[in-house]
Length: 423
RNA sequence: GGAGAGAUGGCUGAGUGGUUUAAAGCGGCGGAUUGCUAAUCCGUUGUACGCCUAUCAGGCGUACCGGGGGUUCGAAUCCCCCUCUCUCCGCCA
Picture (cartoon, chains in turn brown, orange):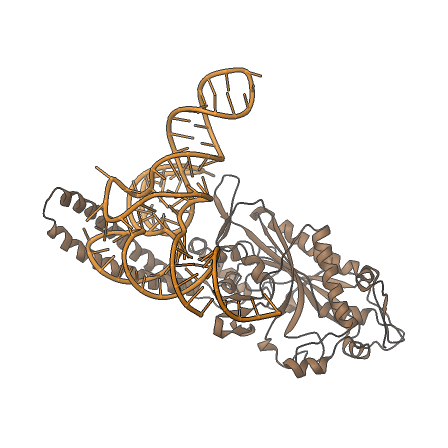
């Protein structure tokens, strides 16, 4: 959520930012409602001030045995007027909130301007894409041949887009999760969290999933709960409506399953593991002081990249342009893995600085050097997303004989096994 | 699921309709005293919003005692609904 006063004072800058994002925003309507609300508020507060003073006087005069019926009946009228104004003010406040919530964050000044994904900029490409002396298979064939994933039974149990990992396939998934959690807790200083996977509407609003992305989430309507689409939701909301009394930065890492309906993506990437309704992800979240957040964003990207470097997988880092930036992000890097079988890049991480956009929504503050409460800056990044990492790993390390080699960093997590073979 | 108790400032904890715009203590901050530390004494103390002075500060006002409604001239206090915590019972991996 943007700061209303900032919008008031920087109308032109906000208009430009929205245009660069390609976002349709009714600023005139917003400012009109804001103006009306303040006028009503002023009148109501003035009357309340009067009522407070007179009520006090009534108390004093009554104790002195004087008759106060005149004042009481006058104040009864004032009270009625106050009630009307309060109702109007509540209505305007709700209207204002409704107009404010769907406004996306303002992109950081360094973000390249562009209309859509075509305007994204490749920042760096790391590692070498493999050259095969045989026809490389896709992960679907590899996973089926090696008995790692049972696509058919996943569909039977839950429908298309749900996976059943079996045997060493399940072990590999668990190994990757544990490898990443160990890396981020031991070497990058994150505190491990196991959060709830169901969250209610206030939490979903805090990080910006609601109201805009309601259709992409699985809802448990009978209890007013939503399955999390990412661990970002519970992690960032851990400190919702708090004035933090602990030193910043706060760094959390969590492995959770993520649930996505993929409502707008029906028919895309339907085969295999690239786009599924449930996948595992290791997520990094940091709450930091405002002047640190852009340095921390670079650090966060490094932490995600380290995963891929240890696994010796080729990847590239892209900076999203204004038109492709997520709703709440001020700046965002995507990390894409090379899928050697598909001959294509797969997004496995998205690292964003939200500045104070989420913190304002969620009410997460800290005390600055002068002791004044200020909103923290929040960041998050996948470190990294499973399923697609799994895809890239299988396709990257496939051998001519149909087996898949295990990178050295992962062997200790698989009882020293260095190769997956058909049984 | 049933019954009961509770939720007050950074913390502890008073307060059952109007001199309480929340007592007191602890903590924090500033100062005094003091070889040093400790102790003691004095002062101070939150958040949000609105308006104003024309401004890295201050003044005025409003709201805030878990959340939301209601009664009243006036609500931390009375009434209703909700949430959460604790205790006991039931159920259960």
